[in-house]
Length: 336
Image 1 (tube, rainbow, N blue to C red):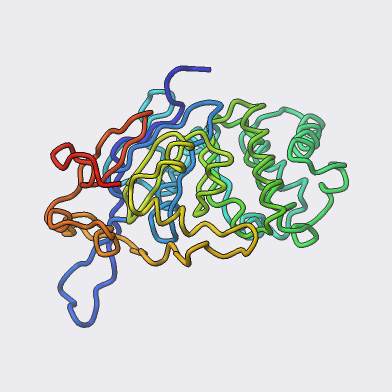
Image 2 (cartoon, helix red, strand yellow):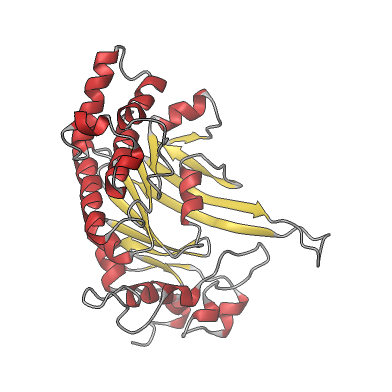
């Protein structure tokens, strides 16, 4: 296993221009969907990206997959900076970085049988020379994601499969070109609880057996703790806390991370133990003129400086860090 990251993002920022409004037709509104995000993905390890809807997680995945291009910042794969556009450069990039999307039905061609969907990347990227080799690879890929017997599933159309089975097909298809990085964008959010665990186990086995660098994107911090080595918490386009999964979940420092943990459903009731909900602090994004901490309006510990200045990144113990004024050295240790 190499010491350096397979995929590395440095200070990624994505700014979208919003439609002009009738009330103010001359002013161009913008949205910072991703703002100065840095991240490293290592071979054989799972990194989780956690946050509510609208926090910028999917936009960051699209930047890492090169489906969108950043306004600023860099992406490096195996230490080399990349900027892949459509065509050969993008095809070479996708051989190394693949994506599994949230909706397995929408991501599969309804007119293709499963075998053809999985075989298509092999043909596009010319992974095998003969049809017999490609058919053997399709069978192996379906077996790898626990769709057995593979001949039975290869002949099915997507509508003939369950949601969990369709997601397994999407995973098999993403593995067809032997990628180094797999970006899983909320891969279990549309599935039943029992099926979620099985899909996460499939992803974990593929990561272990193939030495993949896996990014697991989710709004469920409990599942992130279960399957990830590290967790990064995203709010309003920024990473507000990051570190080893055990540290982040057991000793959460940022008030937003603490809210996510409190809002985790109780296994017995299916409801948050104290009624907390992550949408209590929802923010869909931040414009360039935004100053101060983006969570301050919902933070029980907000101070005057939170409205005046953006909080610093404060390193903590055990590889954990937080973006919060509460932990700035000049403030001393926070109460409690």
